[in-house]
Length: 367
Picture 1 (cartoon, rainbow, N blue to C red):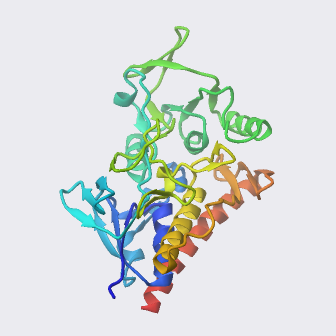
Picture 2: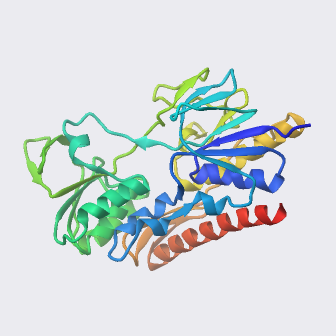
Picture 3: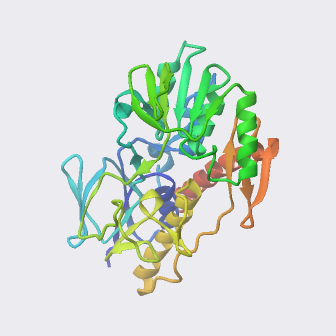
């Protein structure tokens, strides 16, 4: 009896976790589709902006990760999902058929309707974005860099750039890091200001020109480089035969299924817990990728999915520079800050790399 065919679209944290789970079972023919040649360690990318940093240090080539594992890799992107036909149409014009499909396609940059923003700002979401910003800042110290968005990414970008540039953070909420408690937010604000970062919160940009921002109220803020870190949008995919919500995301059940034999994980999977949307983080993506893969394997085996998805958070950590950070750990939310928080985040990065590499080394050895 032939093995079922599984297509995993997207080689981010969710997609790689799913591939690792499939490899440990070795019970299906698996194909990865991703437009990039590398797995991008997106939460690490702000550290690529520091002096001596490199974007390449925060990527892992698929060719090396998947060598001798039996996973087929296709450098392409899914343009359309034909759920009822069990086919995906690729951007190249080709197509793939599947028995099971995991859409782990991540997200795109959200561009609000602020005139001029998309024309003048550097987004910061992918390795390509990080490299473009590094290239713009290369050989230029002391530039006025305005970071739009004082959330997780914006704060980390500002903290890394403050050593070589004049940095200003504009946040629409009343405080930076609205994702954490007020006490940790105040600590982050204090550390950034000590590093010379100017913070304006709340702040609303009305329009963007080539070298200045026009603010609500009539003020103008000048800049040399503008960085946009203000959010994510649904992936650019046509989901034929899949119910969509008002924001353009597929509607999943409690197991991440959006159509017969079609599942989502990562940013494409809007997870709700007790009625609240769970923040879309790399940690959630990795956990969801593993869960959805195990659900598919269970259905292949005996048709039963197991219990619904119940994410278990280990914490949230934000780097403020190479030495300090803020966040919380464990499910009860033990607050950490300073050197211990930054060290913990570095440890998380290291453990993820080791765990991922070991998963695929074991798969190639088993073969």
